[in-house]
Image (cartoon, rainbow, N blue to C red; front, side):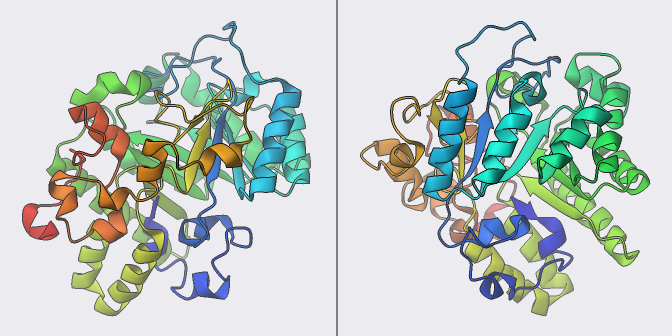
Length: 393
């Protein structure tokens, strides 16, 4: 994740990671990417069931009646116990649609009891006032709601008419219950012109956070490669996101804005700041060095509905093991697995432009899943690095 509000607008002081000691167990959520122990945030895709059918779903979610070999409630609690013992700071309950699991509140309660910060990633359409109040009683830290446009644009992505209005109602119910709420938006040719409207919605609804995801060619999203933006379009989008974020800060209404899954955004923000505020740029460079770029296999992990462990939520075609057979921490630290060992030192193995890029230390070779999907080689350069040859040399 690249914190636009943090890096470009100075929402977090450069000394904050030092002030907090940079131990992940002590850091607030907005500083976890700077932790030096890098215990992973774990995405638990707890079900493959979903009430929608999103065209870019990385998890290949199925209908509400899908019968799969999901981890049971008790198995889920054992997983949470394993994560807590290993020192994982955050568990993100995702899907499919996690609200289709009736035991979600019980599992959230268990995670919080074990000292984990619990968050949800959802399409928002199933959040009622009653459910929101129940989540609030569970001390849920955050709900991220996926919106890929306003009105009919979002509905087209979700595969269901009325999905936008239901998600908006769910968002309002969560805010009414006092839960921090944010948006998740996946950028592509079909919707990038909706980004200004998303910022307008943020202002109108008092939304505190938004994550703009660059498209990853995984699951059903693998069919959207031709819908990815050209490099010049990506640059304009990132500039627009920075400009709109700054507008909020200038009006005294700071919001948390992040871009996700394209670590070229880090150097790009830094280079722009070099022109606008060289002193701030030096502080940002230090933060980017702490961040270290792509965290797959290090700072982010995924456990799917059947208990398989993956390097991140987009890498579900490769499993390192199953939590029904071995504890998560044992699987995660097993560098006898060649891919796991290389992911933990990925800067040594990337090729192409990545290998000779001057930003490698703060980008980490960008997104390996996208490189593999586009070229067949997990260590090839990421085709969505939009920096020019001159900028990386």
